[in-house]
Amino acid sequence: MRALYERFRTVLARFQKRFIRWYADYHMRRGTPGRVYRVPFRGYRMWLPISWGKTVAQRRFGAFEPWTFGALDRSVRAGATVIEIGACYGEFTLYLSKLVGPSGRVYAFELVPQNFEILTRNIALNHCDNVEAFHMGVAARGVSSIEMAPDPGHLYESISSISGRPYPDRHLPRPEETVAVPCVSLLEFMAAHSRKADYLFMDIEACEVALFQDIEQTLRSGAWHPIVYMETHPQFYKTGDLDYLRRVLTESGYAIEVIGTHWLCRPRTPHAAASAHASPPQTLGSKP
Image 1 (cartoon, one colour):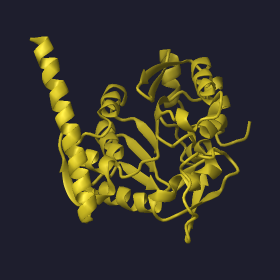
Image 2 (cartoon, helix red, strand yellow):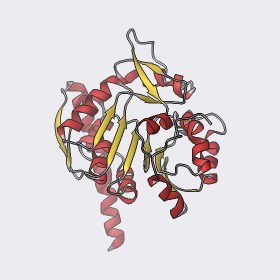
Image 3 (cartoon, rainbow, N blue to C red):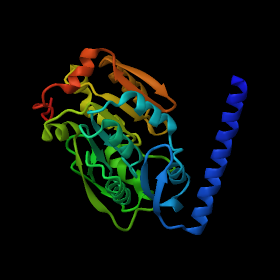
Image 4 (cartoon, one colour):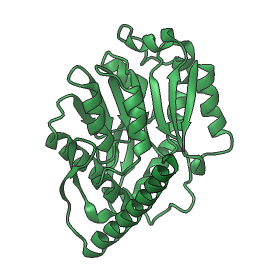
């Protein structure tokens, strides 16, 4: 019976994948305008630019990164403070808002102007009063702003100034028009808000290396030990980057659960986990 069930799940998954690919191609050809959809299985609605391709169609049907939603179910508690870096259209922002509840808080950062507009529309659509969105980048101290094209097609061209990565095969002709998007250090942001985050969630296309270089000493000292969930980007890393991330986390007292290309990183000891709930970080913004 179990073998039959697994076979059924495999067939269903293949059908869903093919249907979403057909659905995305159909709306791309038509140039279907964006609209609001009720997302099945997730309990929220999203305005989505449905002609933008497969990953948007996956979001529309609640099929985008199911492993990430599962990881969040297992690791985000009610009342937590979450910093989300790279919020995109807000699919995880909205889910995090539900998980932390009215006593929790979600700070969502998105660099790309078009994506930020969609993010804020979806936050308002779902009345997420516990979410605060920032049209900002999170970068190392000293990076005050980044030049961004209004559309997401030039993302990699723009964020190379944060990540230091050349992004091979990702280059496009330079956009005719850009806007300056402010950047903030993660530690300085927390110090300014007089609170530590319990949970750090990020998908930032190799910029995580620079971010960890900025927070490494704070993690190693034990002054801050949030749960960390992130997508790694080996295709964009320089030699040794992945080993560096793993070393910083393990030597700072984390256990790493690998979920595909994602890492769910938890403090190994209750003492480390509790440090995220200590008094406000009055010195986190200062240089080491």
